[in-house]
Each structure stands twice: as C-alpha cells, then as structure tokens.
Image (cartoon, rainbow over all chains, first blue to last red; front, top):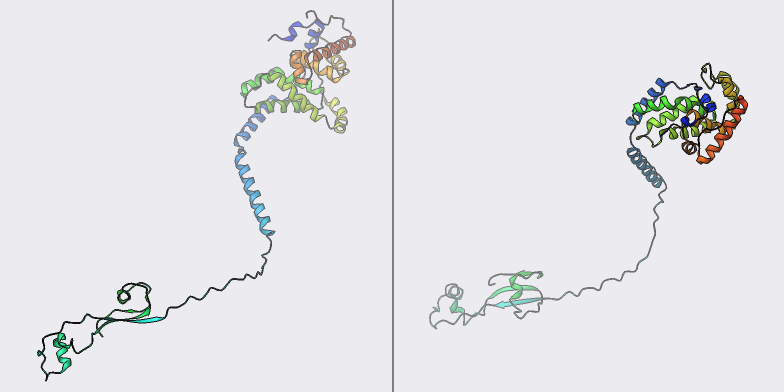
Length: 169
Length: 163
C-alpha cells in the first residue's frame, strides 16, 4: 500500500512535517494492557455465573411459591354408596360316611359265652351281621355340589370351614 | 493481540491519533490510551488496524465530549494547559502555533479528515471508513479544508500535483 503522503503537494508536505505532540505514556499503556490481559484470563467464564444465577432465581421462585401457597380447604361431599347385598350363608349339613360292611363270617365261630364287644375286637366279621356299619368320618359344613357328595369334604378341600377327617367313631 | 504489534501500531499512530482525538474532545490522551487498550484486548488483529483505531478513538472521543457542560467548563483550562498540538517545528517549516490556529478555525469534519489523511497517513477510503462517510465525501472535505488552511497560512501552492 503506497503512502498517500507520496502524492502531497509542497504545502501538504510542509504541513505534514509538523509532528503532532505525543501525550500517551507508552510504558503506562503497555503495563495497563498487560494487566487487563491478566485480569481477562483470570476472569471466570459466563457459564458458571449463569448457572449460579439460574439456580438463585429458581430458589427465590420456590421461596415465593412456598410463601404464597394457598391454604388447604376441607370440602364435605356426601356420596351415596349402596350397601352390598348380604351373602347367603349355606346351611351347615352333616355328612356321615359309612365303612363298607365286612363280609359275614361263618356261623358258629362266636362263642355264645363270650361278650359281644370282645368278639368284635378280635373278629370284626363276627359283628357284621349283628352290628350296624361303623362311621369313618363326620363332616359338618356347607353342602358342596359334588358327585362324590359324601367323601369330598373329608379330603380337606380349601374353603371347608370344618372338616374332621377321622377314623371310625 | 501480540505486544510487538501493539508497539508497532503505537509508534505509528499514537501521535496523529492523539491529534485526531484532540479535534473532538478535551482529553485525547485518555481516549487514545483506551483505544489501544481495546485493541490489545482483541483476540486477533483487525484487518485494518489503523482505520480501526481511528474509528474507535472517534467514538470514544465523541462519548467523552457528549457532556457539553463539562466540556465547556474544562475547555478553557484544557486549552491553557495543553502543551500545543505540534512539537516545535524545523527551521524552514511552518510555525506550529500558526498551523494550530488555522486548523482550529476549520469545521470539525474537515479537521478530522485532514488530520487522518495528512498526519495519520490513511487513504480517503480508510478515512471514510473510520469516520463513517464515503471516500468521495472525505476527499471533498479534505480539499475544502486544505484550501482554507492555505489561505489562512498565506501559502500559495497547488492543491495536488497528481490525481
């Protein structure tokens, strides 16, 4: 780039020969420039101050909202709820099960002088003809619709309120 | 910016820039120093540091002179305390005080262009960029101001020998 003063007239050249007085302290300026550069490097960026400012605003906002929170209102409302229909309770039934009758023994095996209860202990067949069949179990509870009506409750079904498995009474 | 580049620009532009800022405010030294400090704060050197410095110095000087009351209050004191716009001239050169007086009599727009072109070494295009006018306007202001200076200093020279 050519210096425009190369094309000056004699008057312009003589005028430009005057040196403007200097007023700036060069050393002070360079020192100040270095100081500002140091401050700029030590200055934190804008991110952390922005985050801090945002959190501060959020905290203030929450505090304001907490202070202005409306009081709780108690609203009485009548709601009609239909009462549930009573569940019919099945009547308890008593089921007696029978043991299969023992085949009759030969006549004459039982001594007439021997007591009958003793004979039954030793030979149940002796009682088959004279004694009624013994009960094997008693069930007290609701009637269950089951083809095996007499035995099912004795197997301890779930829901049977009272099942009493047992042997002969 | 590189401190060496700052030093070179300081050597080249400090004195004419001070004279330039002196046309607009009472504290040109502060304005020039602030302009150089802002230049030093830049991450990279501007494309045209000279024009950049003149533009920033002009804005700073205008800001400094906005307080008209303060300016008027300090004007007389500053003028009295000022060491003069120019250093003592060589024997065959124009008288500094006479040149200063003639320059003072010009409108500020003409003074800006004359100082930036004659002492700052900026082309009219760069002067226009610095002060916010077109290069033709800058040239017209310069020619008119120079003609006035010549008349007031008693010189009789052609305005320009080449185009």
